[in-house]
Length: 221
Image 1: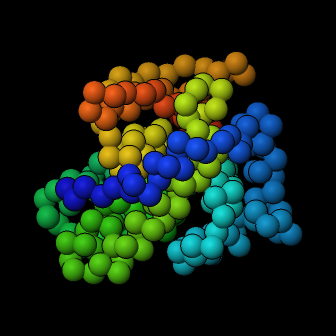
Image 2: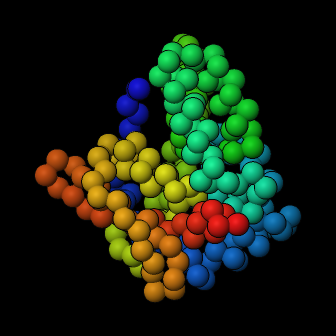
């Protein structure tokens, strides 16, 4: 598969980012605003802009889209991993037309699924439609930036927000061009579920933290 990386663009943001989001304090408030038609974080209005790949969307607005989607009927993060595995296999088997068809059907109801965005980008690239490929990459980039905006991920007290339990892995591999070492999980001081992933870059390694209680909640429903 094509190795797509935003390493040099996003790494400085990670190094100097600050926590702009506190799950306990902000999650429910942003979710409420996402349903308010008069809010600048209204989900439906922002989704139209995201679908059009509007690069003027702020990181806060994209983060609110991710949070708003957690209350969507189609949000089934663990079940969705099975679809993305099958989509990857279609591309691996060079069935690019089928991957594009199935990927677009899926993304219509799962607009923030990183793995699908990357697989669609790859399929369009292989078909010679670089404009479409770049469009899907642009959406993935916006999601990565929103994740980094939410927290620096350097400690369990300042984790990054992740919509999907695999998004942290994609950020490490795609955004930072690094490998994943040890993987674990735990809970923060508020009891929220945290994914802990070791990011390995040569001889150097660092643990990044991702907060995903909204995802684990769906698993047990």
